[in-house]
Length: 334
Image (cartoon, rainbow, N blue to C red):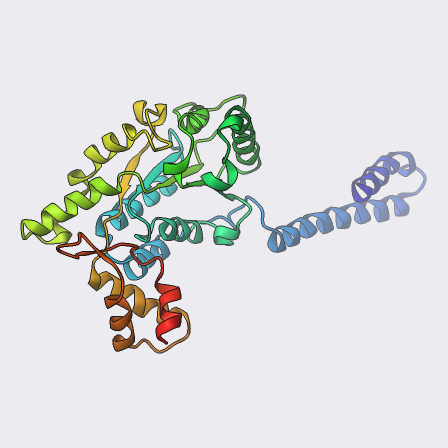
């Protein structure tokens, strides 16, 4: 507060001394101008070192996201295409009509959390560590059914406060299949087509839901393609999304059960993550070895991949845990 007080003091004294002390007046004006310049410079320096809701810290890297999805996400051609187009279209839209809402579905280890991380890393300079990226885990943040009403109030306040602080905020809800039904409906107004609510606009925010719900349906479609001798890469979003959204909506074990978010068509995309095959596990293993600073070894990765559990029992096509446990498994084989 002192610099601003000094500036006001200097300017107010200019009038009083103008007639009798022209030299002093010039000095005072010069000091005031210098102080103003200092404050402006100080503010810019502060923004440089301290994360804030400005382009220096929040800027969409379209190419970065595209390359990351293409080179780091394995076996998810449908999810990769949908996420790339949805995020790019939203971030390039200067006047969106509503927040971007993505619901990612599939078995564990198929890449849902990883994709959320890639999105954050290509929008926020600090990635997942950004103060504008907020992650909720149902079993950790909303464990008790008896506290449901308190959770609703707290969640609404948290979202409103953070979007007020930075309109370009991201909210990730993990373990939606373990969330108490009815809780997520409390944020419905923030996802809707309102220009603002009580003076706050939510249209630039991003909401991402992660869930294992719908995994059975996605696996069945992938299995049907395999049995029919059709290439996995032939699968399109329209082969999965309509029935996926319906199965999630009617799943009583899901936090999205009969939710108004689906009923009112506020989820922009239901993104299916396919179960991973042996060949995808190999790619994950090679990438993990490189990430660990090890020289990728095909024989080591192949041995590790063969010892994993695959399903269905008769065909053994898909990895039971996707790529989730590969990091730990490789420690044993290397």
